Structures are given as structure tokens and as C-alpha cells.
Image 1 (cartoon, rainbow over the protein chains, first blue to last red):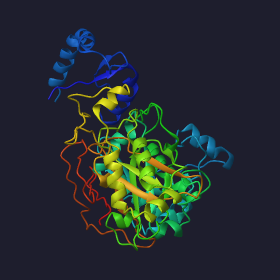
Image 2 (image 1 turned 30 degrees about the vertical axis):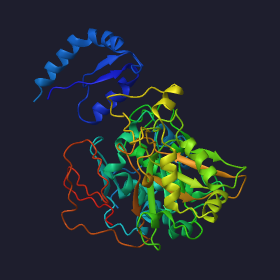
Image 3 (image 1 turned 60 degrees about the horizontal axis):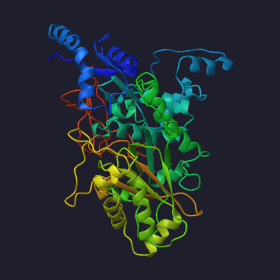
Image 4 (image 1 turned 45 degrees about the vertical axis):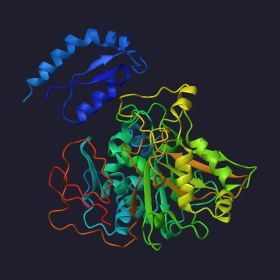
Length: 66
Length: 393
């Protein structure tokens, strides 16, 4: 199943570290500003909207993985 | 013992090299020479030091008896502490402990380790004054060994695969012995169904310890009511989310409870019931109620949100020294649905490891995600097919 992961900016290093350990170096992610919690639904939509194309591209890449 | 890599240093270079390689918790270590490691393994009669105690699929890392022995030496353990270290690691690898999450979480869980039974005194553990403080080698080094294994073998390095925002002092070490309670109360291992003559180690991923004060009343109910209010602190993550925790009653408070006829069951049940919190109380204290999330609280019939999953999720022990009237609460880092305390019997020195046969023990995991099962034992096989022995009750 195609997948990606939404993370906030400070977690890029730890996610990269885990991806390497799990045999998926450079695994894609969608990075959003930190913190994400406490935002209203409207604010969350504002954060997500610019990432839609990137998300679709990453899911398309994932669907082509063997 | 097969040695995968032998490092040779001048004595004055050992510490700096281990620091440079990131193999310490920030404090100096005892160099793990072959002789010291073999002495550790000999105590448990390990025929095969490469045998895995457990394997963590989410990190693709396993901890062997040799790994455990090396890090126990580094921590400063005496060889006779090693059976406790092994039993504690076995507990941590139970899927219900949720080790991967506990080591990774921003919440900064400590590996709280409690030994109940006669082996604690035999190896010189402290159950009394400065119970959670410095000064006792066994307490300090057994807990430290577990953290060094987590860092050096499972990769839980701060800033890398350990994302703790703050961490806590308990991540250096948080290990102690239970002071056997006065009659008619029974030790923790007996409460959990083990024989009185056995020794157990209980490990749970823990929040920071919180000292509790009740210094003017002799009423057991008033004492416990204040402690329950401490548990349901609105700013604590597990408040209203059905967690677990360890209540360590100091001598005065335990004595009042026993003298006034409180059973251990009654104490646990009271703490469970009185640590529940209403949604209004949370909101009045500025805490938003989670809706539709994994952490959404499930209220009891009266609308109150339990802070503890059940009375049995209060691990009740006695410990510490006489003083002004102190006890201690160590809450769980996460709700019980996510992680729970796990207990294993400590095999006395010289007792052989269980024989799982030539093919090792069978693993059955459906995915890399941990189960929420509360199985009594976990058996795992490595990807290479080598057998792993785990504690078998």
C-alpha cells in the first residue's frame, strides 16, 4: 500500500535515522512546521493544502516500489 | 566466547575512546574486558553467549546474552547482579512492554525496575533510605545496564532514535528493591501470583518519580486521598487516560494503612477510584479533552475518566526510610493500552536457562507493530533463524 509520513520539522533527523536502520534510506516524508498540535481544523487545512501535490507524488512513487 | 571485535587501548585512553564512540551515558564506564564479560556470563551458565534475549523488529536489533554482559560490565555491575539484568531485559522484550515506543517517545520514559524477593538482599540491593537516590552499587548499576543496552545495542541514542524532549534523571538509572511489607501485607511478587520464595523483577516505562507528602495526619484515608489527588494531576499525560503506576508507601504511611485495617486490595481500589477525574475538572485546569483520537478517554458510568486502567494497575509496594512522612508515586509514561509493566522471575545464579530445543523457540509476529497482549512470556526467533530463549514461567 502506498504510504508516506507527515512529520514536523524537528523530527527529520530521527526519521532519517530510523529509515536508514530499517533499510529505507532517504524514505520520503511531508514536513510541516512545528508544533502541529492545538491548531484548528482551518489552520490544519492551511498547513496541508500546499502539500497535496507533494503527497500525491510521493504516493505515486511508493506505488511503483517492488 | 567468540569476540567480533577486540579493541586494545592504553589504560588512560579507554574512557576517552568510549566517550568518542558514543558508547556511554555521559558517565565513565568500566572497560568490558573479556575476563569481566565471561565472569558475568558464567553466573547464568550461558553456553552460547550469542543467544538472543530478545529481538526488536521495529529497529531490526537483537540483544544477546553477550551484549547484556558487556553493558552490565560497563555499567559497573558485579557478576551476581547479572541474573537480575537478564530477567529485566526479558521483561522489556515482552510485546506488551512496547519497548520500541518506550525508547523512542518524546515523553522520555525511564526503565523503572523493581526487584521483589530474597535475591534483592542477597546481592545487596537497597530497599530503604535513599531508595531512589545514590549510594548503592546494585541499584545504580543494574538500572544503568538496562539503559546502556538500550543505547548501545538498540540504538536509543539521544538525538538519534531517542526523541525525548526532556528525558529525566531516571534515564540514567531507576532501579530499586522492595522493602518487604509488614504482615499481613505481602510482597509485590506474591501479589502478582509468584511463590513467596521466588524473586521477580518488574519493569515498566515510567514517568518521572513524584515524592508525596502527608505529614500531619495519621488517617490512612486522608493520606491516600491526598495521594490520589496527586495521581490525577491535570498536567500529567496519563491523567484520565487509564495508565498504570507504582505507589511506594513509606514506613509511616504503610503502617497507618495496616494498623487501620486497609488491605492491599483496598488501597489499590481506593487509589483507582479516587484518582479518576471529571472532564470539567480537566477543562477547568486548562486541559483540552481529546475527541476522536487514540488517547480519547473512556469514562466510567458516572462520567469520570479513570487515570488508572484498573485497581490492579496500581503496583503497590513499601520502601524508603522513616522520615517526616514521605511516599512516592511513579506513574507510567503511557496509557495501559499502549504499554504495561511486565514481571519476570529472576533465575538464581547457576539455574540453567530453559531449553527450547534445537530449533529454538517459535516466534509469531504478524507485523512490526507491537501487540497489546499481556502474555506471560514471549518467544522470538531472529531473522537468521537462530533460536531465542525467553523467560518461561
